[in-house]
Length: 430
Image 1 (cartoon, rainbow, N blue to C red):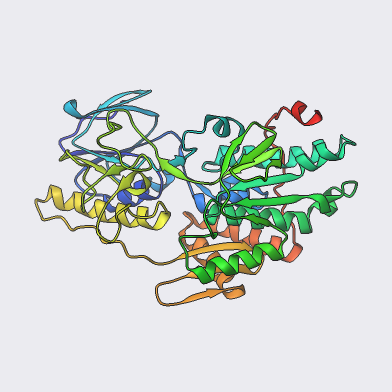
Image 2 (cartoon, one colour):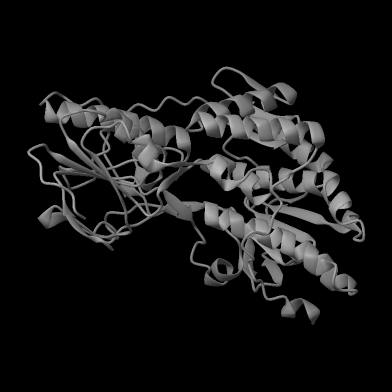
């Protein structure tokens, strides 16, 4: 990797997400050598990926170069690499660009889409966890409408304009709301020769309510918002398969669609060497103690989505969201400094700042510790919070200007097919 040797302890961080960046900030200009590895050279603000998928934002407005984050940090090194294996006995990490020894290792690989072992769904559905995946989904949505113009068969056209979203967490709810607004305000102008009233948006949830991690009031209000936008919600329904044409469920309801978006769960990104069955817990997460130290190791830590800190209050670990990841990263960065100074470590305590989701224009739900609210004010709070946590002044300004423009014009300028997805549509002609 061409990393210079040093007398300082070497800390290797795998992953440049919310947790990895927070750790790096805590180690700024300390007497350590920090090496950050990631398969992308940018940090992604994942909560806004759905806006890239629906043409509301361009991908560069929610991504920020990792090297720019670290540009003023002494003794910091970034390498673009895929981590392949951890050799714990040798204190070495193996990547596609070479091996590197470490004194301390931090695993902050984040999460990926969880298909729960259903290979058919994994092959044929669309995920939305990365910028490339979001661009693929954007292209597919637009290509479906272009394809719908080319057929005079109603069943084929309906399948092309039928969207099924599996999973009614914040991602699924926000994507459903965005698609409903596109149906209402954009499609009639872009496709006047299509009967866009026939566009259907289905949101499928295996449980008895949407946004199940939020309060019942927020859940019901979000459902009311979606219902008002024309989204069809199917609760207590589990998707069992999707062959690229037909979505099958455990009920008597099936769906013909060219687009199935899988937002039904996530799991930690595993790394060979730490993926033994006796180590991982539910969702491929690594069990850690109150200091984020990996079970059975003294110099390996895990933070963020991939870590599972089980306590009486959190028997399944902390939520796999940005806030726990950032807080764990900040705590671990400070603890690594304490460790090097032979000071006692501070246990991690999660401070729940609340949950929120937007359903569309002037529609959002917010649950905070002592207050819950919905509607227009919640929508403004949602926008402010997301702007605040974006990295980089330019990104904040670009996103803000886009939101203002989209609000005033009721438009989404980024509905571009930059990289075609090349879907095989032959099955829909049967």
